[in-house]
Image (cartoon, rainbow, N blue to C red):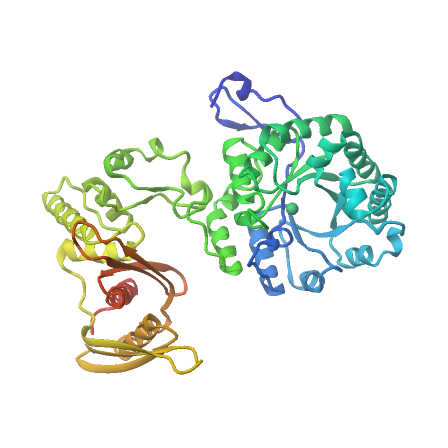
Length: 560
Ligand SMILES: [Zn+2]
C-alpha cells in the first residue's frame, strides 16, 4: 500500500473501517452500512444468450441470499409477465434470510398520475418492499427519448416516489445515464437527484448506463453529488471501458454507500460490474465489512453454482473465484511457493473459497510435481530416497508426454493416473479393450448419426456393445459405458459434459497431432482427461478410456 495519504482515509459516513499505517484493514464503528445490491436477475439477464426461466430466477435468488447480499433485484413486474410471475412465486416460495427483494420499474407516464398508472400499480402488487425506479436525469434523454418537458420529468420523479412511499415502500432511484447527463447539464442532473431525495427516495444510484466512464471522473462526480445534494448515493456501472469494478470502487471511495452489480459480471454488451469482485475488493482490500467472512468464503461455490443455472461456462480467469485465479505455473518458483505461498499470491484464496492450484507444465520441475502430488493426496517428500526416485520418474514421464503434445495443465485426472502408475504401478486394470469402431451415416436431409461398436473384457467376460450418438465421440462414449455397465454399474451416472479439440501444428518434421480434452461429471464433481493422437477419434477414445478409469478409481472400485 501507498503512503499516509492513502492509509488514513478521512472518516465519512459509510466507511466502516480505516487502515492502520501498515495498510492492514481494521474494523471501526460502523456508521452506515454499505448496501450490496444485486441486479443479476434484472440487468444481468440482459446478457446476449442468457435466458432465465422463473425457476432459474428463484434458484439464483436463493444462492444470492446465501451469499448474503442485502438486496436482490428480481425484475420488472408488470412490464414482463415472467417477472410478474417471479414476484408472485417469490412471495410464496422464497424464504430470504439475508436479502430484501426489490422490484424494478420506471417513473410514471408523462402527463399521468402515479396512483392510476397500471405499471406503478404492478410494482405495488409485486409485494416487494423495495421499489427501484429508473428515472431520467439527462436533459437530452428527457427531451428526445421520453419526449416530455424537463419540468414534467421532475414531476414524474416526485409523484412516483411519493406515491410509493405513501404505499409504505422503500424507494431507490436509478438515475439512468447520469454521468453523461451531468456532463450535459450538471444543474438539471443534480436537481433530479434532489427531487427524488426530497420525495423520499432512500438511495439515488448514479448509473453509467453506457459504461463509458473512467474511475477519476466517476470519483469527481460522486463527490460533487454527495456534497451538493446530501442524498445517499449509489453506483451502477457497466464494463464498456473495462473499468466497471474500478469505477464502482472509485465511487465508494468518493462517498457512495450503495453498490450495484451482477454475479460473474453478467449483463448486456461487456457486462455489468462483477459484484463478487467488487465485494471481495471492498472487504478484503479496503476493509469494509460487507459480508460475514463465512459467506464471503462461499463466493467461488456460488459463482459456479449460478453459472450452472445460467448455463454460461465459468470464466477461468475471473478475479478471486476463477479456477485459474490462484493457479501457478510454477517452474522455477515452485520450490519457493512450497515454502511460502504468500510470497506469490495477493491473498489467501480461502477467503473467497478458492484454492491454490499447481499447474503441471512443461516448465515443471521436481518441486511442482511434488506440490501437485500433495494436492492430489500423495506425499512424495523428496528427503526420502524412494520418493526422490519416484519424482524423477514422474518428471521424465511428464516431459516425454508433453513433447508428444500432451498438456497436464488442464487434465488433472490424467496426471493423477500417470502419477499412480509411476508411484507403484498400482493403476488398476479394470478392463481390456479388444477393439472399437465408429461409423457416421448421413441420409438425404436427415441429421448425420453415428454408431459405434466396442468390444472389451471385464469381470472375466467378453462384452460387445453398440452405441448411437449425434456424433462419433458421443456414440463411442455410449458404447463404452454400455459395455462396462454390467461389470461396473457404478459408472452409470457418469456424464461427458465438455469436449475440446485442438489441432497442434506440425513442427520439427512431425505430422500434426490432435489433442482432445474431455470433462466428465459424476454429478458432484468433474474431472478432465486428455488424449493425443494423429487421429482425432483415437485421441478421443484415449481420453474417454482415461475418464472412465479415473471415475472408477475415484469411486474406490476394485477391478472385477
Ligand atoms: Zn444497467
